[in-house]
Length: 347
Image 1 (cartoon, rainbow, N blue to C red):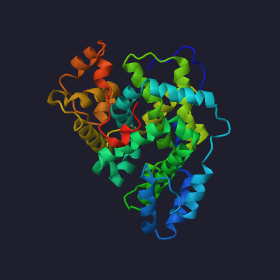
Image 2: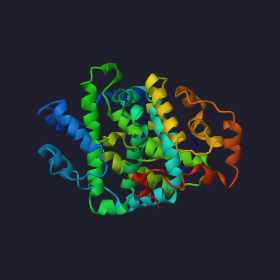
Image 3: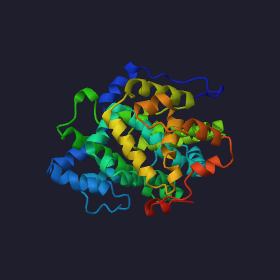
C-alpha cells in the first residue's frame, strides 16, 4: 500500500512491544463476567451470552446488577472525543456503504482469519462454523448500527458497544473454561487480536477502496480511522494500540500480521464457511465463483493461499478487467441485503 507523502511521522510497533498484549484481555469487562460466573458458572454465563448476542434487546431489567452497572457506566464518549471528526467518519461510511459491505465480507473478515491464534477462538466456539450467516448478520447489524447518528444521540450505540465488549469477555471465559485452549496461543480475544480486528474495519477497508480505485482524501482517511479509534476505545482496546494516523495503522497492521498470520485449520475452516455463506446469496450460477475471486483479489496471493481460498480461472482476467469498467463497482456492491436484520439499516 502506498502511503501519502504528507504522512511522515508515527510510532513503530515491533514484536517486543506487541508481545505483552498477546496475554492481556479486557480487565474491566472480564471482572464483570467473572462475577456472573461466580454465581453459577456455565448456568449463569450461558443466559448472559444469549442476551449479549441479541442485537435487538437492550432491556437490562433481567440482567445481573454487575452487568447493568457496567453497561450504564459506558454511556458516554471518551472525554477527548472530537465529535466533528467522529461524524466525518460516519459520513465517509455512508458515502461508500455498499462497497464497504462488500469489503467486510470479502476482505476484512477473512483478513482477520489469517491470524491463526485469534482464529482458534472462533473455531473453538463453533459459532461461525455452524451459524455463519447469523454471525454475518450480527457483524453487519453491529457495523450498520454504530453508523446510525440517532443511536449515538439516544445512547443506544453505547449500549450496543458495551454488549459487544461484554460478549468478548464472555467468549474469553468460555474459551478458557473449554479445556481446549493452549496458553501458548496467548490470551483468547487478547488486545493484539482486538486491535487487529479494529484495523480490519478501518485501515483494511480504506485499503480495499483504494484497490477499487476509489479516491479517498487524507481528511476522509483520518476521519474514518478516528471513528474506529473511538469505537475501539469503547470496546476496551488500550490507547497504546490505537493508531493515530495511516502510517501508524500501516505499521501496526504489518507488525500484527508478521507475528500472527500463518496457515491454520481454524483460519481455513472459517474462510470456507464464510465463502459458502456468501455464495448461497448469489442466485446466478455463472457468478458462484465471484466471492472467491473477490477474496483473492483483495487479500493478495500470499494471504489467500494461507486461507486456502480457491483459485478460480477468471480471477486474474475478469476481476482486473472489470476494475477498468464503470459497471464494476455496481456489480461488486450489494444492492440490498438478503436479510431483514440488515435491511432496516440500508439506505
